Length: 307
Figure (spheres, rainbow, N blue to C red):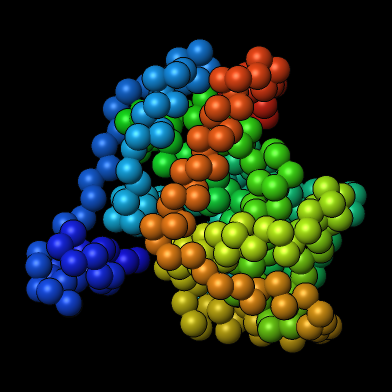
């Protein structure tokens, strides 16, 4: 994780106490949550929209959120030498979401509302890739949920989770979300095994021209790097080698046709957080302006298991 100096703006490693450039004391952002949202009527208000619009989301605040997400699982996960590579990946994913088996249908797996469904008929290498892919969808949502919590100073609950789920249903958001998941998955598997199939399907179904959305691709590449950094707290170089070795054991064929989608420039930190804030605000404004969207939130809420 990076911490940005409040004096000169230079990036530093999070363990640094003093800025490597100007020697100023580094200040880490403290995230404060408190209030509780009890309904969509309390959440979707002009006042909250104004707060979202006026909140400056600094790179330091963003990195503090990433560190929070790491701690959710990192404090509890321990790599177990007596377990298989797949079992250890399961243990990482289990710290963040509930996992269920599926035994029919063509989908390798899918994520919805804090739950991952995985087809256990797949070879172990493909199960590993699918688990990382679907966990990335969850971590993508988790980042935006904590952004909302940070801006509005509220606790996480089903209303925040549902709104972020709503914000991902639009075609261009699905395009972004799927690109992030495929690109993150690709960082941990055998080179040449990258498969952007569902991303390409979303492009084709919604007639999205990738050349007209280079900004979203750059944003996706940047968010993917952030989620890769989160996962690297659990998957070190040796663990990664064991994942790649599983592809050899399973005799997975390589196809280099789609690895080209990984080749994208990244956004700088400030541009990235500005873009991410704009995505949340536009979804929020849609709920304010269209009653049908507001009503749809109640339908989406039913996707989440009530605790």
